[in-house]
Length: 112
Image (tube, rainbow, N blue to C red; front, side):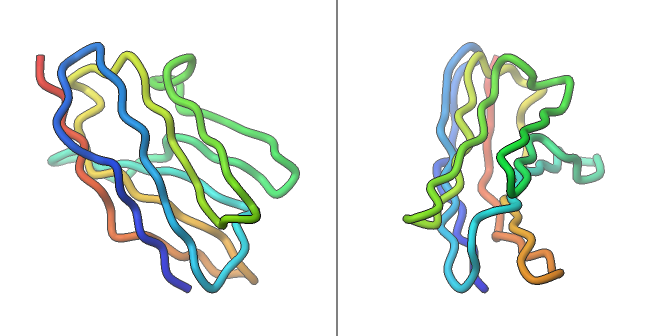
């Protein structure tokens, strides 16, 4: 199983980015995005269950949207109204056959 995240970059506060995660070797049913800011622990940002139930961290509710394309095996994170507190490395994860698989991370930097 391999995951390749992309779409990170430098954006000004108030801007938007769309992260993508290409998955090979696994289905994209139970998926999630996480982030780790400098000096902080990794935290959950957005999760989607196999049945499509979605949950978001309070800090991103109303600004971030997780989605998936089961046929293409892609997971997305649309991020709007970004602020400097969103600066972090973002990781995608899939749960497949009892195991958790992570992408390599993509850096998002939001300037004020």
